[in-house]
Length: 178
Image (cartoon, rainbow, N blue to C red; front, side, top):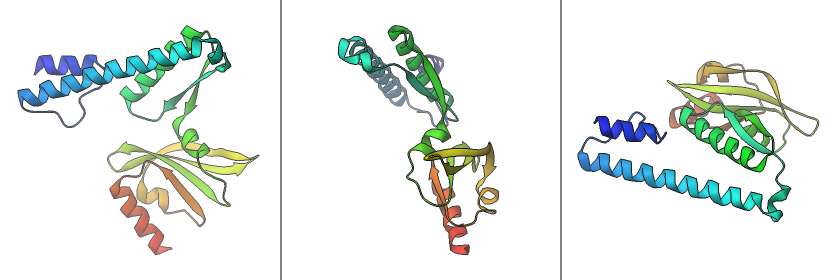
């Protein structure tokens, strides 16, 4: 067990809530993690080489999601972005995850609520209004359960982002009640 957890943790893939029990399962998990780390390294190397060539000189900035999100995912994202920015000698900026979710949505007349899973039946939620040709945050981001998030909503409202099966059922019930 110690070797398995050391390898999995060292490769920054974490071990989550579900771990293999058998030695074969642990060996397969470690093998998959090693392949994943090597694959990520290859992609970073290819991107860095492409960006460093004369045709890649159009890259003037690296943007990275600052969260909310999984710790390991954010850590890998920041490490990759920082490595590319240092290698290319260009600036790096952090962009809130919910702003990225909001920016991907088309304009409509109403409020947009961008969400990301926070665990234990809660989400991280931010409200957005369409102003000056883009979605702009209104107020602070909050960690909240689905029911209190949905209670004050009036139509029209779009919810976008990570919605698990339980959240989808709660949203469906709230929609039916309108």
